[in-house]
Image: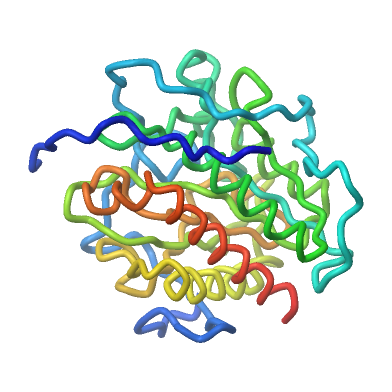
Length: 312
């Protein structure tokens, strides 16, 4: 599927407006082990809404172009878009589920996405619209583009790739369904792609790991360790490939954060992490996130981290 290489809206001046011992993100190809860390001092306040781990987007001044997703709708996720047989490679026989955060059409279905669903330890909104840059470049557009690029890279290594959606449905899927898609696929790894919506001056990426949660339909006891390994490897490769620093406002400069309030992680039975690739509301980070060449680097960093994890 074609990538979204269209230029972002014209930039205008912006107002100013888990092994716990990680001291810094590992820069080695293999990454390092991660550990639990609560939302601590200096972290952005938890944001209301679904598993966005990002704030709701401001109303754009004009209608933004939709991503060019063309995959067929499916209640159990969108299969790989490959028309040809996958090549043999180091990931042959492995299944990866990519979860593009939000849906470009969520903004037209606010009633539906505000309906609450069970996340095992409570109830939370089905989904949110996600955030955007001050110029209106939507997180949902960003996540879909990076997910397409990531799918291409993983398929080149032989992996079978499934997307939780491909802009092929009116809204969602809801956060509980996103988890279910990875579970039913028996995925070897699931990565949910996001971008954050924090304050100006807050910069960098972070990877969100599942906390130890047990309650209702949630039980992460079997995936906490493997998810921490997956997240740490992604963090190590992401910083090396993109040149972006770990978050300066979440994770204590490790690039890793552990949370127990995200249904997409709580309900997962397979190794899963969220990746906040940068802060869309900071001008410097926004300049990276709106760059097609940087998004390719982001996809490569994610792919390298996933491959390192799956190869052990």
